[in-house]
Length: 179
Image (cartoon, rainbow, N blue to C red):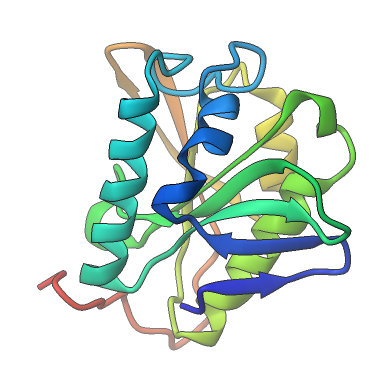
């Protein structure tokens, strides 16, 4: 996947270690970072998160991007694909937009760019795992054409697995290091 993507309103760039303070603003905000165990307490944990995503990129080619408005300004979000709960079935897409910029369609715009990049590099199936109470994320997933495949429960409750339907004749995902 390419390191930088452009949309009409956004620039998505693979996160770098020097982006940690800006990303930590999002990760430490309880109104923005509602996934996982909630807000991230320390800058060091955000730095480690970026390091893991970059190591994963080196291993698989999958990218996690920072999201900026084209005209400049602060980091407004993040979006990308990673091997998550779905394992070899295909990567998961995730997206998060700063609370002050939510409701403008930026998550869907960023995610569409990531899905187009997945298409360009031959990744036929992309998943999302979303809690049923996350109405905004479910609305984005619906705009992206993701459909409910199944539901599982974990230690925090129900988790919906949504997938972009695999085109007829498409092969299963194979990325370096996934054998």
